[in-house]
Structures are given as C-alpha cells and as structure tokens.
Image (tube, rainbow, N blue to C red):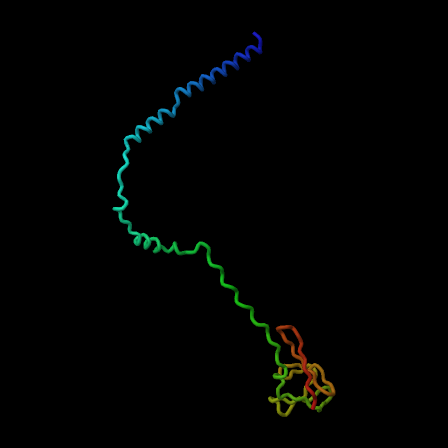
Length: 166
C-alpha cells in the first residue's frame, strides 16, 4: 500500500470516531439526567404562605443596637491635624532713645576719654571708645557728639545713635 492511502485511511478513521462521539453525546446527554432529578425534587417543594403583616419588627431595638456600637461612629479618615500656630511677630527694634534716657555727654575730655552723666552715676564717669554706657558701646568720640552703638542680635544689625556733647 501506498503511504498516502494509509494516511487517508487513518485520518478518515479518526474523523469517523469523532463523529460517532458527537452523535453519542447528543443522544445520551449527561445533563438530561441531572435536569430530570432536579425537576422531580422541585415538584415536591410547596411554597408556604407567609404572612408578612403579622410579623412585628422592632426597628427601635435594631437602631439602638447598631448606633450603640462605638466603631460605627469612628471616622474612616482621621481628621486633619490642627493648623500650626502662627509665627511669632518679628522682633521690634530696640528704642535707643529710651535706653539713653537721662544720659548726657559733656565737653569735658581727658585724652581719648569723655565724661558721661547717667541717672545711676550722678557724678559722671570718663569713658573711652569700646566702653559700655547703659548697654550701648561707645563707638566714636567727636568734637560735637559721642556715637554709641548697639548690636541688635535678632537681626544681626548694629544700631547707632549720636549723643550731642553739652
């Protein structure tokens, strides 16, 4: 026999077997038996009469049970954090006039020192450049006045004021 003929016979045999399986499945459907047994089981079940209006439901009790649970009232999303406190106001510039209230510079001078009168020192004291007067440093001594400086730490700024010499 020829190879082509053998291949054709084997292929035809397989096709014939598949066709027979399809016909057998159509004739003997496995779901038909299940469907019949379910139909018989449902035929025995009878719908009962239920009187819905005769049943009383205690809705207030249910509401109390549900709303009494703490987890019902917890938020799903936590509240946002409180806003940050406002920033502190900027520091105010010190009042040099108030710091030097009652302080007078005189024309009396000995070398590089000038005499200053203050409320705490009624007799006066001689101060030189770099000395402290009521929290201010003497920066310069001139013929017409004494320049005092104050280092403002908040702004890192040097504030100056000139006291006239009397």
